[in-house]
Length: 478
Image 1 (tube, rainbow, N blue to C red):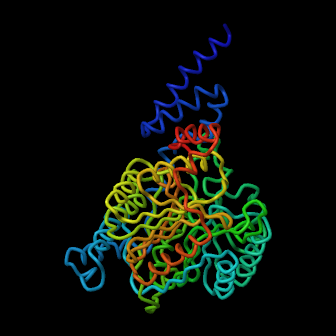
Image 2: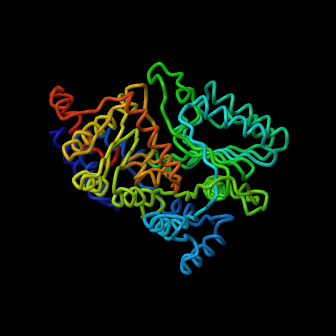
Image 3: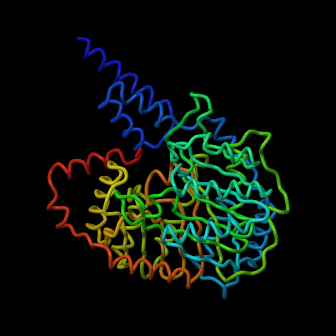
């Protein structure tokens, strides 16, 4: 009798809890499944993971000014109307459409003449990063989902402390959940020396506003407003291949010199002002947006997305790239859990004769996520997509390349979480040479990968197949 009453109460409260918040129907059903299968435990999970952002927090994030960018956005929209922004001889029509898309939905300005360096190895990435920070004379702005208290984390922290002691303005944003084990105490000396560090949705917030499900997954560093880093690498020893569990860590980051750093800087300031106490918020200063001479020939838009906006801007960019492909599509992603629009776009491309190649890891870092990835890999293979399993360690790269013409590098995976739940940032690059470099890197990685077939999935155990199907049901909330 007691069990029946508990079950009935659980059912009633589950329905009241989930349906009272507006969300996609797929996510609603996924949470109902969790709440019904895991009485009591499910409610605890929902309390910490499932509750949506408070309206006050969303408004706080949305109302942050695009410091240093607003005037340029207005100018570029005027240039667009006058067809001066993208002359036909400089860029293909597909790119013109994408630039317009991001300018309208995200106020993402197009910056030209950037110099881009692609970094795929953790040791090389941090070597270059440390050199640039060591040379800083005005400011260093750091934003990472993960900033671990380990060897490389302490090396970076000590370098930041050194620069703060020299009078360089140092600001750090880290995600409290992604950097588990790293506390405010870790940055105490940095703050004593004049630097500042803030946890995104920090642990000091009230319990009622605590949301584990909405994380700042962005990875940005801006140095003196002249050099910027964006991509998939976080700060931790595993990203330098020092983890026995993951082995070699394969990721993709880019180092940018040029005016694209203005957009990265503006994104950092919006995140900082939504995170830091009001007395520490930043306003426009010329030294944060110095005039930069032409460095290269790459045109870039820095595009952000997150639960503070109903428009899934990075996902729209992915769909636009996929739908406009005429020859090939190459994707590297740690998590392959596409929603219906992405799934349909990829399948349509493959059915249309376009070579669609997707590379995924050979091992999980999150069990349910990996099983869901396997489920969708099988589904896409059935539809003619080529799936490659990277076998030389752990693949964490988030890249999309189309036709050697347009590419995207950033923090967003090809999954529900990146599209709807996390705060993400990607660089969309309009440059044939850079696109060719990324496609060649993909081809080199293919030599260290296994092409999966339907037979591979047929040979799996019934239990493994069950875990894949069950994980798929939870896809909208993973």
